[in-house]
Image 1 (cartoon, rainbow, N blue to C red):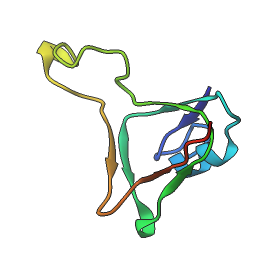
Image 2: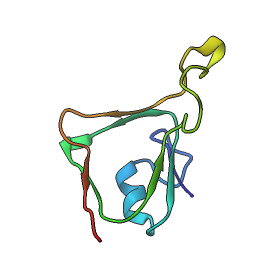
Image 3: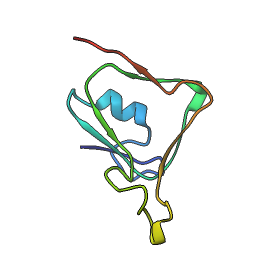
Image 4: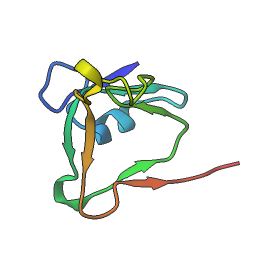
Length: 88
């Protein structure tokens, strides 16, 4: 599992860097935070990966204290974020 945290302290600080370093079949775990689309660039997903946010697997109705959402992973962009390449 490769980890991403825009604040540091993980394997990578950007999703693009984690995708570039990942091998096919890897999982990328993104910490809670805002991941801006710097320079309106996109991430080229050209291999099979699992991309998981901070609340992956947690029922959205029960996240955070009293069911209030918290610790979310947010992709902030004005244009496209991912380019998906399907093969086979």
